[in-house]
Image 1: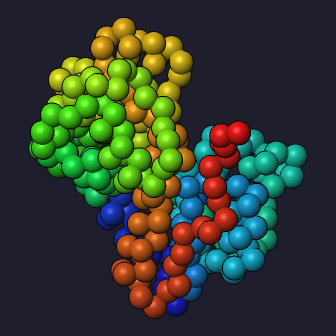
Image 2 (image 1 turned 90 degrees about the horizontal axis):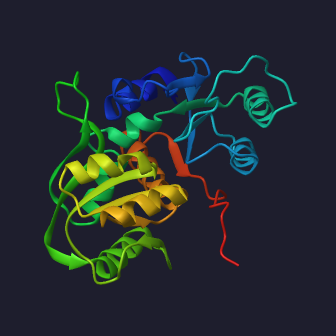
Length: 263
Protein backbone atom coordinates (compact mmCIF):
# COMPACT_ATOMS: atom_id res chain seq x y z
CA UNK A 1 0.00 0.00 0.00
CA UNK A 2 1.11 3.54 -0.73
CA UNK A 3 -0.15 6.80 0.75
CA UNK A 4 -2.22 8.95 -1.58
CA UNK A 5 0.06 11.85 -0.64
CA UNK A 6 3.05 10.06 -2.16
CA UNK A 7 1.15 9.29 -5.37
CA UNK A 8 -0.05 12.89 -5.62
CA UNK A 9 3.49 14.19 -5.11
CA UNK A 10 4.66 12.03 -8.01
CA UNK A 11 1.84 13.26 -10.24
CA UNK A 12 2.66 16.86 -9.32
CA UNK A 13 6.28 16.32 -10.32
CA UNK A 14 5.23 14.70 -13.58
CA UNK A 15 2.60 17.35 -14.41
CA UNK A 16 3.29 20.41 -12.21
CA UNK A 17 0.03 22.17 -11.28
CA UNK A 18 1.64 25.54 -12.07
CA UNK A 19 1.40 24.58 -15.76
CA UNK A 20 -2.40 24.33 -15.57
CA UNK A 21 -4.55 27.06 -17.08
CA UNK A 22 -5.97 29.63 -14.67
CA UNK A 23 -9.54 28.42 -15.25
CA UNK A 24 -8.70 24.78 -14.55
CA UNK A 25 -9.27 22.61 -11.48
CA UNK A 26 -6.32 20.27 -10.93
CA UNK A 27 -4.80 18.20 -8.14
CA UNK A 28 -6.41 15.99 -5.53
CA UNK A 29 -10.10 16.88 -5.81
CA UNK A 30 -11.63 14.18 -3.60
CA UNK A 31 -10.02 12.20 -0.82
CA UNK A 32 -7.74 12.16 2.20
CA UNK A 33 -4.04 12.39 1.23
CA UNK A 34 -3.13 10.39 4.34
CA UNK A 35 -5.14 7.37 3.24
CA UNK A 36 -3.42 4.45 1.54
CA UNK A 37 -4.06 3.15 -1.96
CA UNK A 38 -3.61 -0.27 -3.51
CA UNK A 39 -5.55 0.07 -6.75
CA UNK A 40 -5.52 3.01 -9.20
CA UNK A 41 -7.59 3.47 -12.33
CA UNK A 42 -6.81 6.11 -14.94
CA UNK A 43 -9.45 7.43 -17.30
CA UNK A 44 -10.11 10.34 -19.60
CA UNK A 45 -13.38 11.35 -17.94
CA UNK A 46 -15.39 10.21 -14.94
CA UNK A 47 -18.74 9.10 -16.34
CA UNK A 48 -21.38 6.71 -14.97
CA UNK A 49 -19.59 3.92 -16.85
CA UNK A 50 -16.08 4.67 -15.57
CA UNK A 51 -17.33 5.42 -12.04
CA UNK A 52 -19.15 2.08 -11.91
CA UNK A 53 -15.98 0.35 -13.11
CA UNK A 54 -13.86 2.03 -10.43
CA UNK A 55 -16.28 1.04 -7.67
CA UNK A 56 -16.76 -2.49 -9.01
CA UNK A 57 -13.00 -3.04 -9.33
CA UNK A 58 -12.39 -1.54 -5.87
CA UNK A 59 -10.18 1.33 -7.02
CA UNK A 60 -8.83 3.51 -4.23
CA UNK A 61 -7.95 6.35 -6.60
CA UNK A 62 -9.10 7.53 -10.01
CA UNK A 63 -6.62 9.64 -11.95
CA UNK A 64 -8.92 11.32 -14.44
CA UNK A 65 -7.71 13.68 -17.13
CA UNK A 66 -10.87 15.80 -17.03
CA UNK A 67 -11.62 17.15 -13.53
CA UNK A 68 -14.63 16.22 -11.45
CA UNK A 69 -15.79 18.61 -10.22
CA UNK A 70 -14.74 20.93 -13.03
CA UNK A 71 -16.80 24.00 -12.24
CA UNK A 72 -17.77 25.09 -8.74
CA UNK A 73 -20.68 23.22 -7.21
CA UNK A 74 -23.08 25.12 -4.94
CA UNK A 75 -24.65 21.89 -3.74
CA UNK A 76 -23.71 18.22 -3.82
CA UNK A 77 -26.88 16.25 -4.49
CA UNK A 78 -28.11 13.53 -6.79
CA UNK A 79 -30.01 16.13 -8.82
CA UNK A 80 -26.99 16.64 -11.10
CA UNK A 81 -24.72 14.18 -12.88
CA UNK A 82 -21.54 15.55 -11.23
CA UNK A 83 -23.27 15.34 -7.85
CA UNK A 84 -24.39 11.74 -8.38
CA UNK A 85 -20.93 10.67 -9.52
CA UNK A 86 -19.12 12.41 -6.68
CA UNK A 87 -21.48 10.99 -4.06
CA UNK A 88 -21.06 7.50 -5.52
CA UNK A 89 -17.27 7.76 -5.33
CA UNK A 90 -17.22 9.29 -1.86
CA UNK A 91 -19.50 6.54 -0.54
CA UNK A 92 -17.18 3.91 -2.02
CA UNK A 93 -14.06 5.61 -0.65
CA UNK A 94 -12.62 6.39 -4.10
CA UNK A 95 -10.32 9.42 -4.27
CA UNK A 96 -10.07 11.60 -7.40
CA UNK A 97 -7.00 13.32 -8.85
CA UNK A 98 -6.93 15.35 -12.08
CA UNK A 99 -3.83 16.77 -13.84
CA UNK A 100 -5.80 18.06 -16.86
CA UNK A 101 -4.11 21.04 -18.58
CA UNK A 102 -0.96 20.54 -16.50
CA UNK A 103 -0.72 17.11 -18.16
CA UNK A 104 -1.40 18.69 -21.56
CA UNK A 105 1.56 21.07 -21.14
CA UNK A 106 4.02 18.97 -19.12
CA UNK A 107 7.49 18.17 -20.45
CA UNK A 108 6.40 14.59 -21.13
CA UNK A 109 2.72 15.45 -21.38
CA UNK A 110 0.05 14.81 -23.96
CA UNK A 111 1.06 17.46 -26.48
CA UNK A 112 4.71 16.44 -26.32
CA UNK A 113 3.69 12.82 -26.90
CA UNK A 114 1.50 13.83 -29.84
CA UNK A 115 4.30 15.87 -31.39
CA UNK A 116 6.77 13.02 -30.99
CA UNK A 117 4.21 10.54 -32.33
CA UNK A 118 4.01 12.59 -35.53
CA UNK A 119 7.79 12.54 -35.80
CA UNK A 120 8.28 16.28 -35.28
CA UNK A 121 11.71 17.67 -34.44
CA UNK A 122 12.79 20.91 -32.81
CA UNK A 123 9.67 20.70 -30.65
CA UNK A 124 8.78 23.87 -28.73
CA UNK A 125 5.74 25.11 -26.78
CA UNK A 126 3.20 26.75 -29.05
CA UNK A 127 2.25 29.27 -26.37
CA UNK A 128 5.03 29.61 -23.81
CA UNK A 129 4.18 30.59 -20.26
CA UNK A 130 5.91 33.91 -19.63
CA UNK A 131 6.45 33.11 -15.95
CA UNK A 132 7.68 29.56 -16.53
CA UNK A 133 11.47 29.35 -16.14
CA UNK A 134 11.62 25.93 -17.81
CA UNK A 135 10.25 27.35 -21.06
CA UNK A 136 7.22 25.06 -21.03
CA UNK A 137 3.78 26.10 -22.14
CA UNK A 138 0.62 25.09 -23.95
CA UNK A 139 0.60 23.13 -27.20
CA UNK A 140 3.64 22.15 -29.21
CA UNK A 141 5.04 22.96 -32.64
CA UNK A 142 7.84 21.43 -34.63
CA UNK A 143 9.14 20.50 -38.05
CA UNK A 144 8.51 17.34 -40.02
CA UNK A 145 11.65 15.39 -41.00
CA UNK A 146 10.74 16.18 -44.59
CA UNK A 147 7.87 17.93 -46.31
CA UNK A 148 4.77 15.80 -46.73
CA UNK A 149 1.15 16.10 -47.80
CA UNK A 150 -1.92 16.53 -45.65
CA UNK A 151 -3.11 13.09 -46.72
CA UNK A 152 0.14 11.44 -45.63
CA UNK A 153 0.25 13.29 -42.32
CA UNK A 154 -3.35 12.24 -41.69
CA UNK A 155 -2.31 8.65 -42.32
CA UNK A 156 0.53 9.01 -39.84
CA UNK A 157 -1.82 10.45 -37.20
CA UNK A 158 -4.39 7.69 -37.76
CA UNK A 159 -1.71 5.06 -37.32
CA UNK A 160 -0.40 6.65 -34.11
CA UNK A 161 -3.87 6.97 -32.57
CA UNK A 162 -5.20 3.68 -34.03
CA UNK A 163 -8.04 5.37 -35.90
CA UNK A 164 -9.95 4.39 -39.01
CA UNK A 165 -10.62 8.00 -39.98
CA UNK A 166 -10.47 11.64 -38.97
CA UNK A 167 -11.61 15.05 -40.19
CA UNK A 168 -9.25 17.31 -42.11
CA UNK A 169 -9.44 20.86 -43.41
CA UNK A 170 -7.51 21.49 -46.62
CA UNK A 171 -6.73 19.70 -49.88
CA UNK A 172 -5.24 16.21 -49.63
CA UNK A 173 -2.09 17.24 -51.52
CA UNK A 174 -1.43 20.39 -49.47
CA UNK A 175 2.29 20.57 -48.70
CA UNK A 176 3.19 20.60 -44.99
CA UNK A 177 6.53 21.24 -43.32
CA UNK A 178 5.78 22.63 -39.87
CA UNK A 179 2.99 21.39 -37.60
CA UNK A 180 1.35 22.56 -34.36
CA UNK A 181 -0.44 20.21 -31.96
CA UNK A 182 -2.89 20.97 -29.15
CA UNK A 183 -4.91 18.10 -27.72
CA UNK A 184 -8.57 18.26 -26.80
CA UNK A 185 -10.58 21.22 -28.07
CA UNK A 186 -8.04 23.88 -28.99
CA UNK A 187 -9.23 25.79 -32.04
CA UNK A 188 -8.03 28.97 -30.34
CA UNK A 189 -4.49 27.85 -31.14
CA UNK A 190 -5.04 28.46 -34.85
CA UNK A 191 -3.60 31.98 -34.74
CA UNK A 192 -0.60 31.06 -32.53
CA UNK A 193 0.08 28.19 -34.94
CA UNK A 194 0.04 30.58 -37.90
CA UNK A 195 2.33 33.00 -36.07
CA UNK A 196 4.73 30.13 -35.35
CA UNK A 197 5.02 29.50 -39.08
CA UNK A 198 3.05 26.27 -39.03
CA UNK A 199 1.24 24.88 -42.05
CA UNK A 200 -1.15 22.73 -40.02
CA UNK A 201 -2.79 22.44 -36.61
CA UNK A 202 -3.66 19.11 -35.04
CA UNK A 203 -6.35 19.33 -32.36
CA UNK A 204 -9.07 16.98 -31.21
CA UNK A 205 -12.04 19.10 -32.17
CA UNK A 206 -13.02 22.67 -32.96
CA UNK A 207 -15.94 24.74 -34.21
CA UNK A 208 -17.25 24.91 -37.76
CA UNK A 209 -16.31 28.58 -38.01
CA UNK A 210 -12.75 27.90 -36.87
CA UNK A 211 -12.49 25.37 -39.69
CA UNK A 212 -13.72 28.02 -42.12
CA UNK A 213 -11.14 30.48 -40.81
CA UNK A 214 -8.37 27.90 -41.21
CA UNK A 215 -9.50 27.22 -44.77
CA UNK A 216 -9.52 30.95 -45.55
CA UNK A 217 -5.97 31.28 -44.21
CA UNK A 218 -4.72 28.25 -46.11
CA UNK A 219 -3.97 26.47 -42.83
CA UNK A 220 -4.59 22.73 -42.77
CA UNK A 221 -6.28 21.16 -39.76
CA UNK A 222 -6.42 17.55 -38.59
CA UNK A 223 -9.22 16.69 -36.16
CA UNK A 224 -9.06 13.13 -34.78
CA UNK A 225 -11.68 13.80 -32.10
CA UNK A 226 -11.40 15.00 -28.51
CA UNK A 227 -11.39 11.46 -27.09
CA UNK A 228 -8.76 10.09 -29.45
CA UNK A 229 -6.43 13.06 -29.07
CA UNK A 230 -6.08 12.40 -25.32
CA UNK A 231 -7.14 8.85 -24.46
CA UNK A 232 -3.86 7.27 -25.64
CA UNK A 233 -1.98 9.29 -23.01
CA UNK A 234 -4.27 8.05 -20.23
CA UNK A 235 -3.20 4.50 -21.10
CA UNK A 236 0.45 5.55 -21.05
CA UNK A 237 -0.07 7.29 -17.71
CA UNK A 238 -1.33 4.04 -16.21
CA UNK A 239 1.81 2.31 -17.47
CA UNK A 240 4.00 5.05 -16.02
CA UNK A 241 2.31 4.86 -12.62
CA UNK A 242 2.61 1.07 -12.60
CA UNK A 243 6.34 1.36 -13.26
CA UNK A 244 6.77 4.02 -10.57
CA UNK A 245 4.72 2.12 -7.98
CA UNK A 246 5.16 -1.61 -8.72
CA UNK A 247 3.47 -2.47 -5.43
CA UNK A 248 0.20 -1.04 -6.76
CA UNK A 249 -2.29 -2.43 -9.27
CA UNK A 250 -2.83 0.22 -11.94
CA UNK A 251 -4.99 0.05 -15.04
CA UNK A 252 -6.55 2.34 -17.61
CA UNK A 253 -10.34 2.15 -17.71
CA UNK A 254 -11.41 -0.80 -19.82
CA UNK A 255 -14.97 0.46 -20.20
CA UNK A 256 -14.84 4.11 -21.24
CA UNK A 257 -15.20 4.88 -24.92
CA UNK A 258 -15.77 7.79 -27.25
CA UNK A 259 -19.41 8.93 -26.95
CA UNK A 260 -19.36 9.95 -30.63
CA UNK A 261 -19.96 7.20 -33.18
CA UNK A 262 -20.17 7.04 -36.97
CA UNK A 263 -23.42 5.46 -38.23
